[in-house]
Amino acid sequence: QVQLVESGGGLVQPGGSLRLSCTASGFSLGYFAIGWFRQAPGKEREGVSCISTNDGSTNYKDSVKGRFTISRDNAKNTVFLQMNSLKPEDTAVYYCAVRKSLYCSGSFASSSDYEYWGQGTQVTVSS
Image (tube, rainbow, N blue to C red; front, side, top):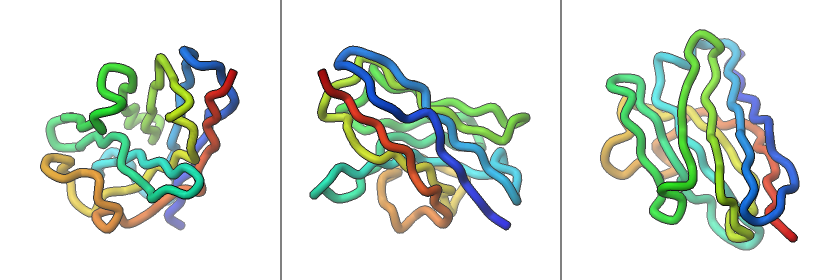
């Protein structure tokens, strides 16, 4: 019943932009904090961003601050990740996940704090 589906990935040149979408089914996404993670080949999955449901606060990995923006449209049961000024280092499979709590504050980037995961969408940044 619970399902998350990511979309919007693709191939872009450095400096380009993509907007990823995470659409939920089987539950109301607006009741949960949602995180975005990514995993590049040979690297561990890392937290990119998180948006809470209590006050709408957001958290970002340092390397994406000022370039990525997380937002949500609860009416559409969707969370977005707008990615601008993309760099080759951003190349990875991007996943959205449902956080076990309502808050993203503190250490938001621990995979163990998230319950449900999507299948991921590939983002490739290359010339």
